[in-house]
Image (cartoon, rainbow, N blue to C red; front, side):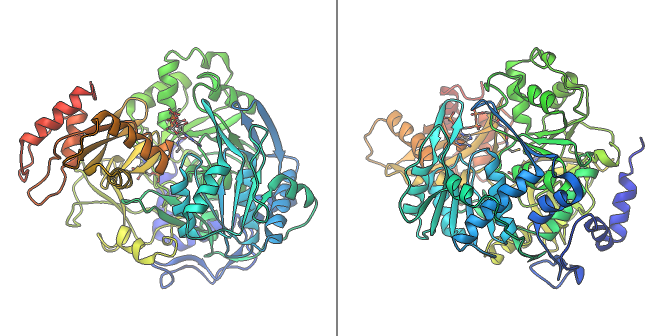
Length: 633
Ligand code: COA
Ligand code: AMP
């Protein structure tokens, strides 16, 4: 099939507003828009201004009304607990109404924020949809973050309520959530009025009378109650999702209702090449953007079946888990991070486990979240014998910037490239002075404004930070903070971040945030955290610390304390396991720490002595410290 990509991209180029207005026709609107795009509204313009809609209505009620009530909306498959469940659209509607009624009784309404801190269970999706139903704004926090991170989000989002579960389950331990929530509320200045806790069989959470409620009991009491969908403006926020910035203060990415629905529904057919009624699986977590967009909203808005998977690619119980789920539930399109495939490849390089299952239902594998290294892509292609499609996007964009649109007809795949910009995206590569560079030349990847529907209109209550973080450096463009190049055929290659964000097992983390934690240790004078290469996780953080003069404590003991400190303050997901004491840090004459050079040394990459270095001998010391730990060997 010849790809229709060029035609469709051309249609968008010649009439962007008409293009997205046509896509919007697939959804129900309570009131049509006055303008598909209003350049005067918001920071850089707003989509579907004047329209009223409800995301939950479109994701649930609309399908029940159209006769999909009996179709599975969610399949819950949890190898970690040995549980499987099938939830039809009609059952989902009933649960969402019961949870929405519970929130309404608590006084939660349009514009109120609700934090959702939940593991991978269907109730997490129900909570998100219940908020959307009543016009409340959810903010999901990933379970692998510690109390202090949760507290930061509580203080920024100021939630009226928190919805949680008694525990999350990791292969090696059960994590009681309630003590983490109690501690976070203790640390935070803002105090939510209510905490709803779903009691899971593994842990019974202690509930504080007055503030805490048993979610299961409340929903049972509200079973059968109708909770109507509240009309909201298309431009009203649906959710806030915090993501790592360059400091310990995360950025609250705002998603609207109208544009978000339009972009996601368009992506399902055109990018992922699936049809309503098919099974679509994104093996991520609801705490990340992939989980928001492609576990919950896109499949449900589109009338597909989504899978909520509580497990890992390996060890739950073996590297055949993904293949079992695909085969058992007839998954047509599968989306995961390359790191998951690296983990499987390490344990089952010859595909012995794959051979046990019939995965002929699977048409395409999609990868995102980090650079898809050619080795991993090739291995997946050889094993599965289907197209393996890399696509590039960010929490901020909510859907694909560059990809290979399966529904429009696959373009030739080039390993190492997520292919080409999707309609909505005018991507340029600029040098630091803002001039476009020639094909093949590395530069800053930027998108010409306005951003398409579905992307962040701003940061939560922080327009100025939104401008300074994304729009000011290259006027007229959105800065992706990714560096890369375009080849002669127009294919994009995404090579590295231009800021201090690192990507650990597909999770986005701020080294600046980790440095803030290390610097808070009483014995640390200064520090630098860099991301070093890791075979499975892509990158892992490594901290270098200079101790205050006069500190006589054993360096090894301090290093252990630092590892624990980052785990306690940021969370296990930071995967911070390497703290190294050094005498000095390499700096430029103006005092800037040479993190880039340190990273190259750690990764055994060729590096040049920076011309501005203050004392070249320090780099030798760093190299010895790195080699002494066996890093990069
Ligand atoms: N709640 C609590 N802790 C969590 C957690 C959660 N939801 N998710 C992860 N953690 C913990 C892990 O238990 C681990 O703790 P440990 O240091 O005690 O072992 C730590 O955080 C690091 O987790 P992770 O990065 O997941 O590493 P891992 O070694 O446990 O597993 C992979 C490695 C590759 C199997 C795993 O990272 C994976 O499945 N990655 C897929 C990536 C993905 O889904 N990305 C989302 C974007 S698409
Ligand atoms: P997140 O906001 O967590 O989704 O992380 C977004 C960042 O992950 C991007 O800015 C990239 O640095 C990286 N990333 C995501 N997908 C890809 C991809 N397909 N190729 C290369 N890098 C990617």
